Length: 251
Ligand SMILES: C[S@@+](CC[C@H](N)C(=O)[O-])C[C@H]1O[C@@H](n2cnc3c(N)ncnc32)[C@H](O)[C@@H]1O
Image (cartoon, rainbow, N blue to C red):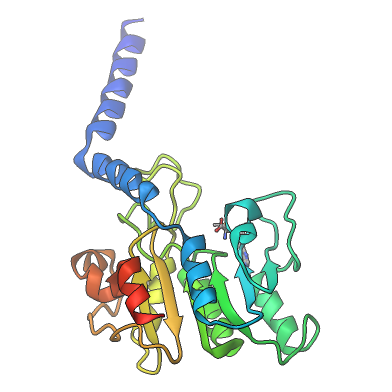
């Protein structure tokens, strides 16, 4: 009995230490702050679509989950959605496919038409760097020259948010997860033939354009995509700007 009591006390001690650890508390605080930021991704997507001043805009969302959270809020003449249905059982989308499958079929003319061009593609599917890099590459092939590729979750507030293991809910970020999206975006931030920036709201809304000057490429030296370097040079790495600053660049 004495032994059991000692073991239980030890467990509670461990839990208390974890929960009062400054690293853990920092992540909890930063989650709270980020979750309250405005505007939301849908406001930014709608702003970009409106800026194009076209009669009928065409929007594609990769990774939809519950459409009520973003897809349904988007105002565009034509809207298309892609999701294999990993996280939301109903999965009410146009194409129940992975993004790789969708783009392969689009290229082959098996969905929509080969000459389809989108005004805005919103990438919010699988949050791993290599997948995000492919999603950006494929989206750039199918956007209009003045169109935008937009990405969610480009600005993880802490390393715990940028963890690879989505399922590790005991992490200091709890169930908040940006994955390694920032790495895919940061790679394109170094591409001299493109413009890019990240709006400091809603976990980081990255924007890439072929023609609209959104800011300078990143010259931050981070060849191994280390989180501590992102943290130290966050603003320059991501070209982190406010929504008001974006409005001056895109009118
Ligand atoms: C973060 S949720 C999307 C949230 C939504 N865009 C929003 O703004 O509320 C990620 C979604 O990506 C989907 N997904 C997972 N792997 C995917 C893949 N390879 N291609 C496209 N979507 C994927 C999941 O099923 C999930 O519904």
